[in-house]
Length: 476
Image (cartoon, rainbow, N blue to C red; front, side):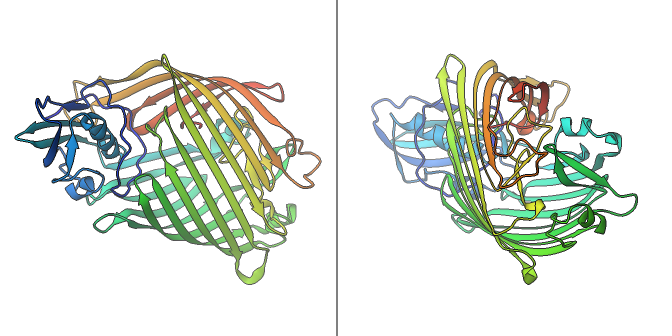
C-alpha cells in the first residue's frame, strides 16, 4: 500500500479523458518512479488502483490519459504521472492520491494508492439569516434571525461521483430542497445532467435600498416572500478542464401586499410573477489547487435569458464574466488576480433584479453596503505568504483513516479591491452607485478539513472606514 500525507482538498472537475499537460512532479512521495536501467521507453502493462472500496474503477480510469498498451518514456514518467495523479485527486473523492511506477521486461506497472473520504454528510444547519456577519450584527432583532435544520449530502453516490443533496431548514427562513447531479454518463462520461427543486419562505424581506443599505420588512404573521423553483440541465465535457452546461429553470415568486405598497417597483407593481430562465455556462478550470488556489487560472462565461410568463415584464438578458489567475512568486509568496463583470440588458428592471455588488460579488470592506445597478466590474488582487505550508495532524485516538487526519495550511494575505457599478438614476440617498469603490486590507487564511477555508480580514475601504471581517471561503 502506498502512503503519503494528504494535500489540501480541492474542488472537483469530473471530466473527459484527454491528454493532460505534463507538470513538474513534486519532490515528495506522492509520485515515485523506480529506476529502469537501460530502458528509454516502455509499454504500459498494468494499471492498478488500491483503496477504492466504494469508487468504481471505471470512474477512475476514464480520468487518465494512460491506458494499458500505451508507451511511456522514462524521462517523462514522473511529470506524466503527476498530471494523472492530480486529475484523480481533483475529483474530491479522496484524502490522498499517490502513484508508483516500476518497469520490468520493458513494461510498466503503475499503481495508484487512494484514501477515500467520508461520502455521507448530515450537517446541522445553524446559520445567520443575513448576507454576512456584519449585516446580521446591524439588525435589532438579530437573535431571531437564525436558521436551523439539517443539510444532507451524499457525494460519490453509487460510487460514480454523483451527488445527492437535501436541505430541511426551519427557523427564521424555511427552505426545502432536493438536488441530484450526475456529472458524466456513458463510457467516456461526456454527457451529464442535473435536476432539483427548492421551496423557500422567509419571515422578513429586504424590500428597498436606502443609504446603500437594505431595509427589512418583518411581518407579524405569514411570510412576506415565498419562492419556488425547479431546474434541470445538461453538462457537456469537451476536454479535461473544459465544461459547458445548459440549464432551464421555472420560477414562481409571491410577495405580501404590504411589500408592493411600500415599494411598487419590487416586482414592477405586481405581487407575484412566474418566469423561465435559460442559462448557458462555459467553464475552463486550470487551477492546480482548488480549495486555496496558488497556481493556474480559471475562466467562466455565463449567458442567461429570463422570460416572464404572461408578458408581465420585459425579458432580461444577463452576461456574467469571471477570470482568475494565480502565480507562484517564489520564496513561499503567491499572487492572485480576480476579475468579474456583469451586464444586464432590459427595457426596464424590477428592484429585485438590480442586484450588483455586495451580494455574490463584493468589494471587501463594503460588507454592510449593497450597490444596485445594471452593470458592474470588479478587480481583486492579493499576495499570500505561506506561514504554515500544507501539513497534517494525526488524531491517534481515532482509528478511522477517513476522519483521523486533519490537513492544515496557514497564509498571510495582503489585498486590494476595486469596483464600479453603473446605475441609471439611482435614488438620491444611495451614494455608492456610479462611484469608484476601493479597499485595501490584511488577512489570515486557514485551509483545513474537507476543503474548508476560513479567513479573518482587517480592511480599510474608500469611505475611510475600517473593520474586521470573517469569511468561510477563498475570496478570489
